[in-house]
Image 1 (cartoon, one colour):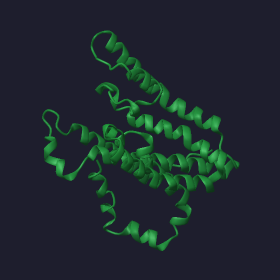
Image 2 (cartoon, rainbow, N blue to C red; image 1 turned 90 degrees about the vertical axis):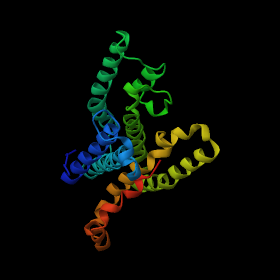
Image 3 (cartoon, rainbow, N blue to C red; image 1 turned 90 degrees about the horizontal axis):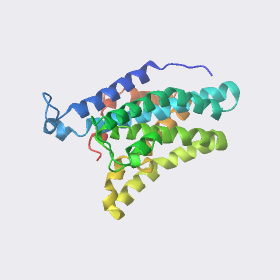
Length: 238
């Protein structure tokens, strides 16, 4: 399978990383206080959501390329590539934090190692600061585990329906937790069923890319000076 780079996606990735870094820097020593930008919303949250869209788009884009070239998706090769790309760095970091903890230089919560090693950190309510940021990587890994199987087993047509369903299932999950599980409202930002819609959006954009690019209305929207305002509602998402 060939690998085609999309410069604009690389640019969006840089912007999303910048938003996350800015969100984490806000309120730290010698930086702007968090209250300065509070009225504008959560920059870090927006950055993560943009990254999820990018991830859904790129993974689907690569699998569509493979299907076009070979007629199928090799799950074995897909998982091998993801493992070699993510596991070494992730587990090296966890090992470093574990050693620091054993030396008394860091403090870990009881479930940190289990959730970190199994990529379920987004379900660890009491994750320590040192590994809590791995929650977004856990969401990515859960997506990598599920989406290729959906495409391989059901094909693009049914996978499109499943991804489309995620666009309304995720908001319903958030609403249900908000109303019926108030003690678990923290999960709205972290659990896969509640935040899978940005990833699904990226998947659908990749699937629809060839049909959207020639469409005059789509091109008109992209070229509009108001296009930059599309992400604005994400600033106020809690």
